[in-house]
Image (tube, rainbow, N blue to C red; front, side):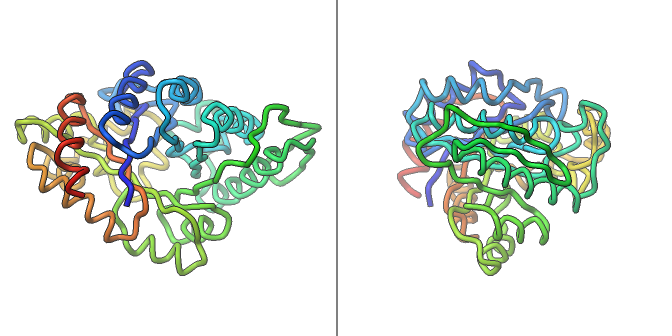
Length: 314
């Protein structure tokens, strides 16, 4: 299993993200995941740069492959524009780019005041959007009129020699089946062997990627408090993360989240055996590439620990 680094656009600004990418490459991480948000989940996270601008900077700062984790090409940005952005990223990264996509969250996608569709409709929109994007990547002129999108006489004049892979995120049975049917790979954010197994049994091929969060530091209690302060949304259950519309709503829901609940999913503290055990959970679940996010700072110490201890032992 490969281990990459997860760049959080919710928690860090563009210059910090580029610095972290350089640190990840120097530490021996194999690739980069980068989130795509209009808002952070909570105000404490405090950032939300435009991902496509950051990716352009990453293409000059490192030689690592980059995957969006994940872009929603259905509401906030029309799929024809996502196709152009992703094509440019693939050219800038000289083929080291993959487009991770998903059905999105109201948090980011409701900003124009459009009705937030049901989960079933969002899956329909995602499938149509991926079809539009792939047609545009051919470099040919495209016109399309479907149930959700219209494209008229559109052509990408800057297109990659080969289309980037499309990795589809999915958490429920229907979305996993869609990922298996139309994706070049699959994305998830937990070490869920059942989800990976369903993806494979439904005919899914290609890479399975996943994200993981840790808060490495000398003081476990301080790390747990940091993880609870910055990422309480990790423990908000069910479909709520898909439908809550603002960071303030997430903060209200997070009042029910305890430090212990967040620590169940975010490994906190200096015990590198626990960090290794987390990575082994992903490997055992059938994940091919896991991307680790360091929560809350202390990145120099984190990268040194993973360079010297975790990655060699894995």
